[in-house]
Image: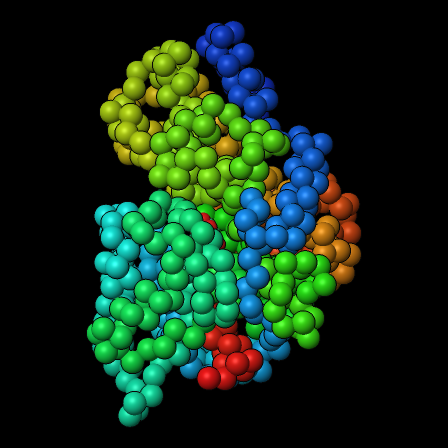
Length: 479
Ligand code: BGC
């Protein structure tokens, strides 16, 4: 049984090896001008970062007033805080990233947790097929996990399961809600407006799998809870991975739309911030973003998410590269059939290219020539590719900073000791994402924010957090 450390970690990733645009030996003035125009378009200058943050706070306030606003600001029904002493055994099912995961979580108190987990790949066809088939698949995965780990229940008791379903869901109780929209490439038919818990519970019941869905959790809420289990001053949980979003603790008196339990003092809000600026009023969208958006399964939606999240950054970069190639400003106008295909420029390649500090840009060359099959590349080609990757990556990190700063300013948490737990592949593996975020926060709040606010990797927030949520659900409404 592996022990899962939830504590903030030193992030084991490379730093960005930045390229100095002045060092690039351009092949023509046209090339130089084109690159300079891109630098302009993709740079989030300090004033723009501030303006985005201000607009973001306006969006938060709107969403706290009523349902149906661009940022949904979903009331999660999670009201209690954790102190690390909680004990119990729960199952967690995590759906909403690249893989589906089933986790058995054992909370032993004192902030200690042990977990066992298995990942299952969700077929692309299932993501956009029939909803019932998707939920049946989830139930089958849980069943085979119980078999594989020989986990059984006594008599007619049931496992309590925390269901991390990381899509915009309007919650109506701790284990009820309706799907507002699909995101991140999922689009299973007929689910919008329906309760994902009802679908999952039905799939378990039809198979006689002894599991009760005790809590419906967004991954950001789970991340906040998981981080809080051993950092009690946690004020936010953030996901920067395939998708992006955050949850934070809000005072009940600030949630004008809340009609529930008035005795509660605070509640975790799932912001659904990826939807910010659907109106396209402030985000500096480029034609490369728009091209990607049009071809996505959810055009015109999740505009901020599409500028930040790992699912999209590679495709934006690919669009920029194709444009330069078509203007004969890169690779002498030669294209590779691989790069012609959508989604072939993976965000993971960007991480490698960002970290490539070798004199000949060797790692960048390998990706372009061996993976993407360009017959040959020049140093100039590789430098420009690296610069573009850096522009797209840094823009994502600075937009994340603007959003996090918006929350910290709204709550005032930046003025005191506060921890932010962040999970997701982008934060974990993308070079310098964390430093870019911290630099952005400093731009907004000044140097004190570095002493007060810590941002740390909250690994496995979705699994452990779902278990913690199931525990809180049982504590607050035993049934
Ligand atoms: C979803 C959020 C989720 C985020 C990170 C977004 O696409 O709408 O609910 O928290 O991805 O997984």
